[in-house]
Structure formats: structure tokens, C-alpha cells
Length: 485
Ligand code: 5AD
Ligand code: SF4
Image 1 (cartoon, rainbow, N blue to C red):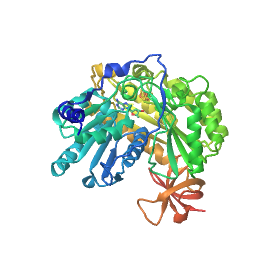
Image 2 (image 1 turned 180 degrees about the vertical axis):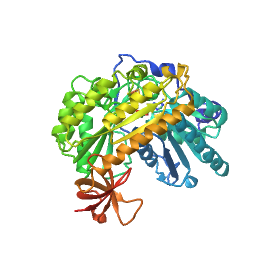
Image 3 (image 1 turned 135 degrees about the vertical axis):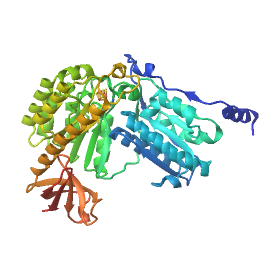
Image 4 (image 1 turned 90 degrees about the vertical axis):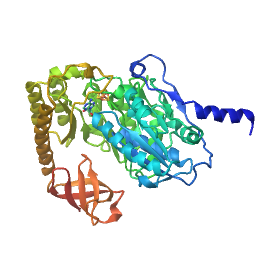
């Protein structure tokens, strides 16, 4: 062994590597150009070849897609995936920071990993994703969870192979979290979970800074991918037989605002021209939703008539405090326009109850909008203060029990409208993309309508991967039953 290498190793053993998150830095937005980096990587290492990895992903679709990158990167080192935690040699927790309960789940799961490490001291434990971008989380892990080996953030998943390979050379926790605005990487490897439908990132980060939301801090500045790279990815998916793409971004209709020559509506048109059978996109913000977008969705059959349009609150006063940039009336007018122009459209939403000092009157306004819009479905949440966000500094006079009552009341109304929306399908024949064998009943298959309704279908397994006509026979609160026709 060369002397310098020997000393390098000694040094590595003794020095804890630290690139810590910093929320103040993460809040900054500059005019600096976004670096576009075209990766050209090769990993050739025998160290972990044949070992098993386990990835647990929490949170949104963006995280699920990041999970696909994590899997591909570990497989590039010759590891195999296992669905059983106890079998793993490498465990990665891909985390979400949007609400406190996501934190609690991760720390609960870390407890299981700790036990496992006692039995298997060679086990490598990594934590990444949005929680890794939070100062308080990294601090807690450094102080109370010394068995964690690596922490890396949302900006450097591409460091994963290097970090995992280096674990054996270190004794201490390796923290590699960057709080800068972020880059755009191309040629990212993905181990896609499905060969029927695929996630495609069209942009990263968010500049909206809604006052309750941690995402602009954990995911960096809004950065759009170049349309040429997105189209190439979709064309490759078409060549490989994919039936559906879901375009991902925190705020997809702001796509292109940071580029010179393209808007979301023109990107949608280009993707529609690839002839992929089904196109979806999440998430839309009411602020950037243009008439051009509505027109493009309405006129192209392969853009699905399904829009997730977060309301957050029905009170204009709360919306202003949330920094949402629209009023109740503006939301309703956009909602009505979409319903009028896109035939058969399904609209779903997100609603937060209990934003600091939300009054009974404010909450009634939320119920009022729900009763007016009769959403196909809604994801409802109790407001959760996130350290570092402006809303977390507001002194809140409303008790948790009041917030819980409001959530229950809201859910009752929301579920009733979901059921009613589903009931409208009974007796109709609708196209369904069949994705696999039904979880509840192995004799059936399951898939989704163009409007994103889950259907369990009496049909042969040959239909998997195809869009078939299904007659709806029964409506439940959260799914439909049907048969091929
Ligand atoms: N508390 C509760 N819900 C939140 N969301 C975002 N931040 C918070 C928070 N601090 C919800 C919003 C968003 C969805 C993804 O999560 O409704 O649309
Ligand atoms: Fe969060 Fe608002 Fe950005 Fe959505 S638009 S990610 S709610 S800051």
C-alpha cells in the first residue's frame, strides 16, 4: 500500500464528513444560470456485488420517481432489490418532509433499522429525500441515531454510488446535503416500476413559497428541463411500448417560465404529438393555469381529462395568508372554465384545514367551495407547522381538537361527492388502461379510466398493458367494478 493511501484511510476514519443542510441558504433565489449537466457515468466495483438492497419511499410521486433512480444506481453496483427489510445489506429511506406525521413514520422505521444493525453490523443505512434537507432532522440523527451511515439530499442523488462505496472506509456519519438552488441532470438512470406507465420529470423545485410549505426549501429553485430532452425521453418510452406518461413537477403549469422559448401548453402539444396513448400531469397551481393549456387539453385525445387543482382553502383571507395568489372567486371561475371547456373532465384537489387562526367562518367557506365544485376526490390535511416557513411563526389560537373536527366534517362531505361522482359511471362504457392483477380479487384485473378512477375489471390477464372498453357495473366510494365489453 502506498503511504499516502494509508494516511488517506486513517484520515477518513477519523474525520466526520459534513455538508450540512441550511434552510437560510435554501430560501435564496438568484439570477444565476441553472447548470444543465449531461451525466455520462460508469461504475465498476466488486465491493457490493451480489448484495441486496431495500428502498423505502415516503411521500409524493416525485419521491416515488426518485426511488426509481435510487434503485437504478444501487443496481449499477451489482446489488439486487429485496422487498424484505431483514434481507438487506443496504437500506435507503427516501423521505418526505411535507407534514410532521411523515417525519414520525421515518423515525419509527429507523428504529427497526437500528435493531437490524445490531444483528448485522455490516448493514449500510442511508437516509435521503426532503427530510435530509432539514437542519433539525440531520441534527437529530447526528445526536440520537449514530447507526445511520449516510445522509444525502435531493440535489445529489447522483452521489449515491460513491457514498455507499465509501461507507466501509469511515466510522462516522457521512452527511452530504446541499442547500443551493439546484442543477438539472440529464441521462439519469431509472429502474422503472412499471413497463406500462412512466413518470417523467419536466421540472424541479418551486418558487411559489406558499407560506405553509417546505418544498421550495427542500427542492430548490424552479428549474425546467429542456423540451428536447423531455421529448426524447417520451419518444424512447413510446418505442418501448409504454402506454402512459405522467409529467411531474411541483407546479407544472409554470413549466418553461425559466426558459426562453416554451410554455407548458406548447410542451403538452409536443408530447401529445409523440402519440403516446395517455398523458397526465401533476401538480397544477391555479395561478399559472392559462386558457392555452385548457385548449390544448381539450383538443388532444391523448391528454387525459383529469386535473388535480389544489384549492387549499375556500377562504380568500386564508388564501392570502397562505400566499396562494388567488381568491375563492378566482378559483371558482377557473374551475368553471375548465369544466365548461374540457368535456367529461374530472377535477380533484388538496385542502388544508386549520391553517393558523382559521375561523369557523373561514372553514365554512371551504365547505362552500367543496359543495359548489363537488370534486371527484380530495386529499385533505390538517395544517402541520414546518420549521423555517413563515406560517410556522404565527401564533395559532385554534386547538387541535377543533381542527380534527373540521377535518372529519370535511371528509364526510368530500367522500359523499366522490361516491356521487363514481355513481355517475354505472352503466357507462369507458376506456380503461389495464395495469395488472387486482389486489383484492386475483380473478380480476385493475386499471384506471381516463379520468383516473380505479376500476376492478372482469377480464383476462391478456388485457394487461392494453386500453380496453369496460362496462361499469358498480360504484364504491373509492373504486368502480366493471367487465370487459
Ligand atoms: N401542512 C399540511 N398540509 C400541507 N401541504 C403542504 N404543506 C403542508 C403543511 N405544512 C399539502 C398541500 C399540498 C399537498 C401536497 O400537501 O395541500 O398541496
Ligand atoms: Fe408548496 Fe406552494 Fe410550491 Fe406547491 S406551489 S410545492 S404548495 S410552495
